[in-house]
Image (cartoon, rainbow, N blue to C red; front, side):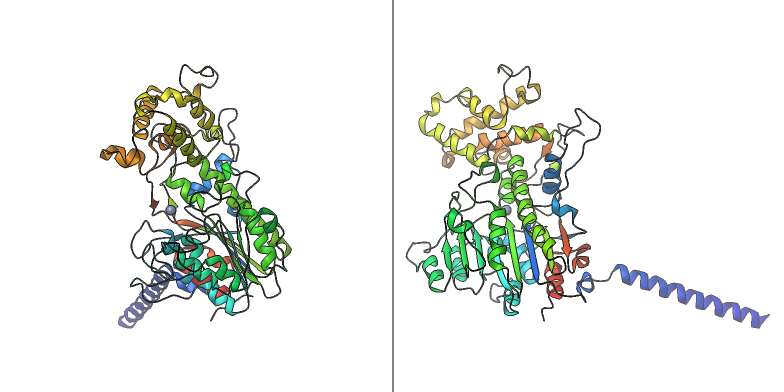
Length: 507
Ligand SMILES: [Zn+2]
């Protein structure tokens, strides 16, 4: 009996032991650091694309999919999204974006994480938190391995995100120093907007463009020259002939034929970079972020569509080299706290109303500036600008000739009052405005009448905004091609670098 009891006891102890081991193993797997998912044993891709939609997270992507799909419930009970090309990629993961300063990080630190695998302070490009150590970028590593390197952006080439792929600076505001690093780099293609400070803050430093030319770059800035670029062009800096006040490409909603698109620059970069040793191309859609800072949804979705077209150039290339290519598409952080759904529209959305908007907030600002220049503040009336409001945003008052047929675009009394208040502030020179705390929330640093108009149109469409800055939402990471499986799961933005490093066999 005693022997039997001993046997049972021994069995029970073993069972307990096995259970604990199984439990410990399960817990260990659940807690495995994501870095163990950063190891790749396959063939390294010869062609690597890294696409970054600045300020683009799930709400920006989903809004664009709703906007360009069958977005209305009015005529049918079967609405449908149009999936963006990259949201159909075989692998989708997500990553956190916080930096060493903030859970609402900036583009300098988040691009540093993608490009070097380190967290740093907001505003810092590829340097440590003490701004002393320079971090080596994935582009520098891969250039040493014989790949060509290209960098494309819809904003100025010296802006934070593109800079994080070639420069090392304690401040993203060091535009001259950043541009000089480009001129002195060994990379092969830079394209997009212009340069913010090509001769330094006081306009007295050696010219960046001349330095680049001396270093062997071909510098082009006309549409004809840029479209003529090809594999025999050598090392190239290509700057769009049409730029805005910040040296960026125009917003897609405002772009005319005089300006190249982000897709044009991407296609030309591929042609210049294509060679037997392979290439790494980073492309940034930089103005999705700027439109979201301004809380302008129509402009943001149109720039997201332009970003998709740029990705499509890489997808076209991928289909020619399916066994040698990797495409990664992500954002660096969310901007604006964009929400699909708004307090006053409940469970309904009306994205089709965004089609009424014909120009960006920035172009409307130009109209406002003209009106202010030719109108005395004491004679200015909201009524004067109603025709332009109708033409630009589709919004009308109840006395408008189209009020009966366009009921859903008629301004409510509440909205008219918001516009009157904003118009009053707009007519005060910006330096003399004294905002209440409530007005700070209403207007941020934007032209009061313009930001009120985008708020009203967006809110009527069922879209909300909660910030004029970046937010802490994670971002999606889509991948297609060699090594794609590593991008599954939920990890940190520094892991994106580690995954690419492993996939590219960088020692
Ligand atoms: Zn931003």
